[in-house]
Amino acid sequence: MTAPAPGAAALDGSGARKVILHEVGLRDGLQMEKQVVPLEQKIRWTETLLTAGVDIIQLGSFVHPGKVPQMADTDALFRHFSAPGRKPAGAILSGLVLNEKGLERGMACGVDMFCMGVSASETHSQKNTGMSIADATARIIAMAKQAAGAGKKVQLSVQSAFGCGFEGSVPPERVMGIAEQFLGAGFRNLSLADTAGQATPAQVGLLFGGVLKLAADAECTCHFHNTYGLGMANCCAAMDAGVKCFESSVAGLGGCPFTKVAGGNVCTEDLVHYLHRLGQRPEVNLDRLVELARDMSRFFGRELPGMIYKIGLAQAAPASC
Image (cartoon, rainbow, N blue to C red; front, side, top):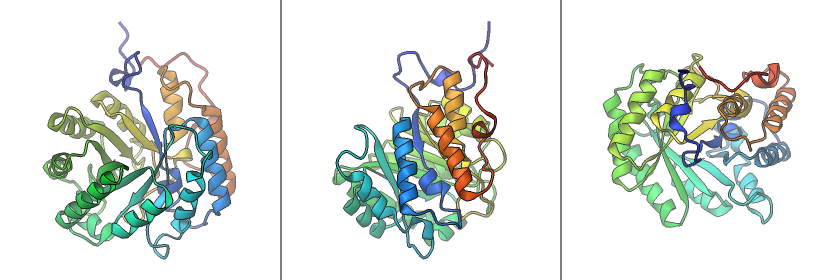
């Protein structure tokens, strides 16, 4: 008997556990790029993502433009796509917020889903937000309640959940403690983020399994960086653990500017290529994602980390091992 493909155990033929694709390239992908992308170019790239059939697109983060100049036009980008007829029904536009000012800006320009989180590393928390873990947790929960009260979708994340570039290992109980506070506040859309790219498949199964033991109805999201080459392997482990939503970046762009060693995200078109080989999400237009990755490569004038856009699609039967 042939063993199921890695990741297949988390999926069934009914579509009830369909993988959800959350594209974060326009935020996490671009925040490391020194060459600022014009608003018009971001609009064209977003239009391609929307027509490709990606479920959620993170258009940007509401941060101080002096710290992350690439995100200076986030408000304008949201306003453009919030206008009638500029996005398909059902498409969700997400935005990252770090503080109350960012939340206020996001409310004003049409964010559908607010993403906010707390680092499980004290050092990373201070570098990223200027707050301790305890202070950041209390503040984020209050912000999340405000957003939910306004009828917005909310995703709460534990960042540096699998390790920290500054501190090394992060105790699992610390990650679970933050997740438990999020769940206790009534939130069920939880993400575990591998900010430093240090996750291993065994860790992924352990931590997501722990979250689902705390709340079987939690809707788990994973965010992996490919810093040490384990991004796709960790995605497979996450699928097997019951994770529903996967954050990735076209062409594998990205990295956190506030961690010690920044590595790119899991590549969207590579992930979709694998899902297609599993017979999942066939309606997502892989050709458009590949062309978008090539366009990004031309724009930045260099080869990007993704694989499929460079070598083409596998001419093979669906994955079985």
